[in-house]
Image 1 (spheres, rainbow, N blue to C red):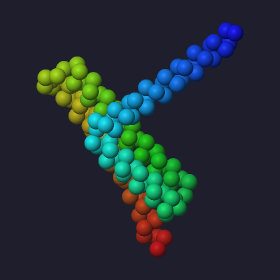
Image 2: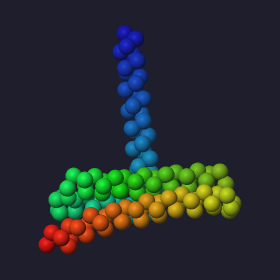
Image 3: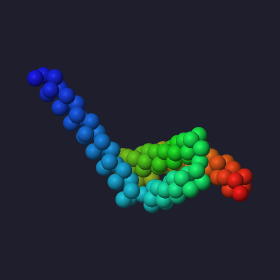
Image 4: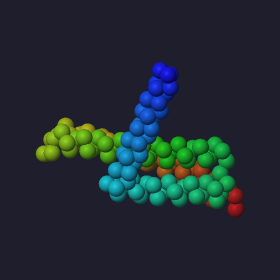
Length: 128
């Protein structure tokens, strides 16, 4: 009986965790224009993965790049919201935190762009 109760509690915790995560995704989608743009870009990349029949490694690199960019945007959103909650007025330290997390997103986008350019270049110019 104790085991069944424990299993139920564990399943409920797992379900709640997924529920909270899903709420975070929905909130980010609703509030962040850049996230929407990045999701549209990710959708296009996934379409081209199938269209150009990327290799397993190429597909994995693209999916990892997409995951990094979207994750960086979510972290940036969370930290910006937290900073705004802590200090609503302009503060140089809060500004530094926001700029740094923005730089994190920028670096991830630049890295994903380089990965995409390398993979797409191969398919656009060598598979003609």
